Image (cartoon, rainbow, N blue to C red):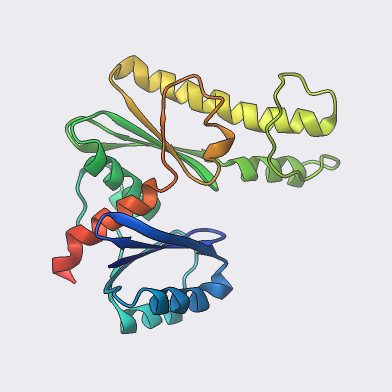
Length: 244
């Protein structure tokens, strides 16, 4: 069995795969990581291999704890991946984006694929039908936009994301909600349209913790998959086991 550890900016996600089947996934804050890991280890004693993907802070102590228990891969730009990386600065490409593109390469071979991940940032990544990763773009995520409105003004409140089913806000709070969420919807639809002008046979994947704010409001046909990144990490681990 495989254990996937995805270290984000705020949470750590852990997932157990039995070959390609997702058995369980958990999320925890970083201070609870060791106890959560031990709980999963006791519940699933057949775990042998682990992959760590970290875009947030992850201490050497935690990494050593994992390495003592399991065969461990730490994902970076030198890890074997199932696509041709044409990014001009591969050493700066985020491991989360590497995992997402890997998932697309395995699940949608020979297709032009746009992966949109709505998390702390919103990332757009394009894999063409020749299995070449050409890059994409990064913009502020939904929470970051709410925080920016509050932090860089004197009087705007800090709000939690909320979908408002109208186009005109008649209060400051509703105006912020519409401006942020509908602004992201318009951004995503705009990016999709630009890609479709060049690639009419485009497959679109929407994933990430904030995807549910958008999925019912986008004009374009999409495949929503909340586990897309975890699946990509599992594919990478499966493909690198012989190198452990």
